[in-house]
Image (cartoon, rainbow, N blue to C red; front, side, top):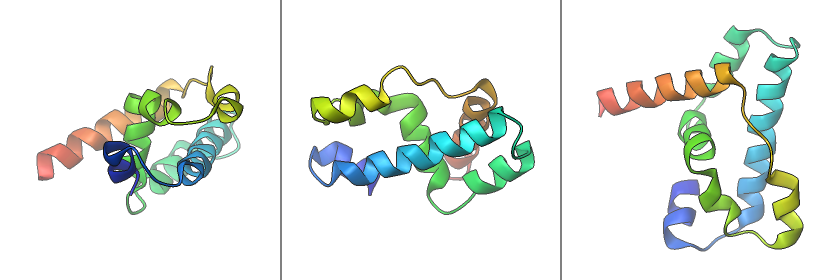
Length: 99
């Protein structure tokens, strides 16, 4: 859904924002030691989660460019942690290899 919305430049962008909040929450829970790395990896293996995480890590500007100014302030300046980015990059590579 997210990829189609970005490509078509239409849809309910608030849905993508909610998904971003979930991904950022998972990243911050691991970053601050509340959940172990294994839990984060399990979460990212859920259906379509890795795909959307990849969009957020690598192409977040496409989502942000479609938002009104009121949302823009909430989402600028956030950086995913290095472990989160490494998991996403590793997962993206596996997805490409299996296609």
